[in-house]
Image (cartoon, rainbow, N blue to C red; front, top):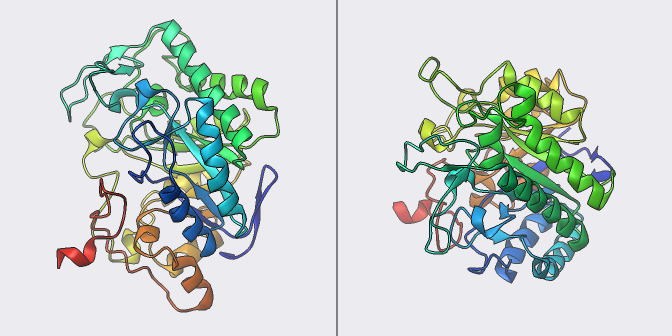
Length: 364
């Protein structure tokens, strides 16, 4: 099944492998994508990754989260992406751009001295108290996302992925830990999900109803049970996934964790099959309740586990991050029978501000 095609809202993807969105530290300071990013994506496409999801691209400079992060906040971003997309399509892969606003995890700079979030809930990792967004600011951000979707379509991306995970703005709205609002965007599960539906609705006005919109969804904030009064976890995440699938989202990538929950985001020492696919149970529960493809990311390392996840209906697609930094040709190796497991040791040394790369060999 790993090498069987799958159709997502009209996108014919040649196999079940996804390059999960990964910040590359390769854009220009103003967010313009570079040929270096194109080189990276083309190498993945040449090595038979079915679907490439770009590093997260900010929809407004006030929502930028990291240095040399991609942006899609202005029409001048469109043309540079066109060349990158054509390089990917030449090899038969599909490419989707992930769009994001940093929310509580926005960089504080001289030009952007404060952080916006649904509610004023302190970020305990940084000691920063964000400012609660006004209704006007929420509406402006909805428009920012919708215009980013328009730019993505004009550039030629096969679709977009809304980043609703990992402690960025949309996951801030979805989680009861970070959303304490009392208006139409806070309170019940439905109201906390409403901002995503508003983005989809406005985007549909700009790009029509056929353009694929995917979501990367936090299924848990990652806190230990009982450690916080307000937190996102099952069974609420299943209801959120159903709401999204019923309102135009064509595929859901399952992930989890925010920085304040410790090492949940990037677990280390994944050296046994039992440690792999650590969100698999969440994925299976959601897959049983939605009628759109479920993509699973999180510590997947071996062909044995990949095949099991598809065969036993945990997911429809396998999403990889660190293994493809270590081995961009991993899928080709798996297909040829040259490998059964990635060389990636989950050390996290690939998070390199000079540009993502496997640095494990340099640590010896």
